[in-house]
Picture 1 (cartoon, helix red, strand yellow):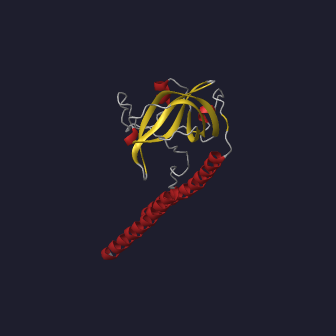
Picture 2 (picture 1 turned 60 degrees about the vertical axis):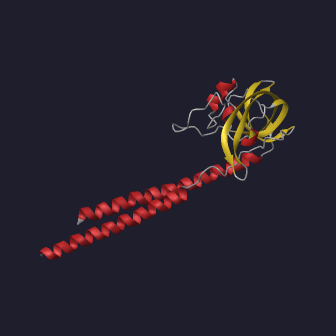
Picture 3 (picture 1 turned 90 degrees about the horizontal axis):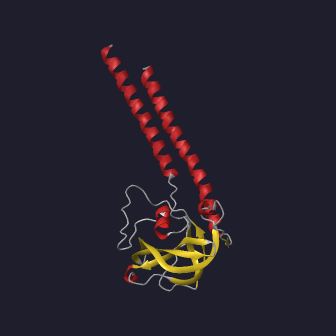
Length: 224
C-alpha cells in the first residue's frame, strides 16, 4: 500500500501548493489594482510624448492639448444602458507630434456623424490596451469598424505615435461623445476562485486515495 499512499500524498501536496500559489497571486493582484486606482485619480500632469517611457506609463494621469483633424477609428463596443455604439479613437495633433485619443462612446444611431474636429484639451489616462488576440476579427477598413483597440496597428493606420490617452474630460465638451474613462473594474482578479478550485481538487484527490486504499484492503481481506 506504499505506492497508493505516496501517490495520494504527493498529488494532494501539489494541488495544495497550486492553491497556495493562487492565494499569493491574489495578494499580488490586489496590490497592482490598488496601484492602478491610485494612478487613475492622481492630479493630471502635462503629457510629454517625447519621454522614452511615455507610451508604457500605463494608467498615468495626464493632460494634453491639441487639434482634432477629422481622422479617427471607430471600435465596436456596447455600453450598459446605452446599447451598441463605437469608441471614437481620434488623431490628436499636439505641438510635439500626433497621438491617439480615445474620446469616448458614440451611439450607433449617431454613426453617420462627421469625424471630430477642432482644438481640445484632454484630461485622461495613458493606456496600453490588452484587447487583441488571435480570435479578434480583422477590422473592416472600408466601413471603419474595428473590433479591438490594437494600439500598434491603430497608430500605424492613423500615422501617430503608439501612445493612447483615454479621455476622462474633454474641453470643449463633445456633446455626442460620452467619455469612457479608464477604471480598474474590468481587470479580473479571480485568484481566490482558482485557489478554492485547487483546494477542492486536493480534497477530491485525497478522497479517491482513501477509497483506493479501502479497495486494496478489502481485496487483501478477501484473498486471505
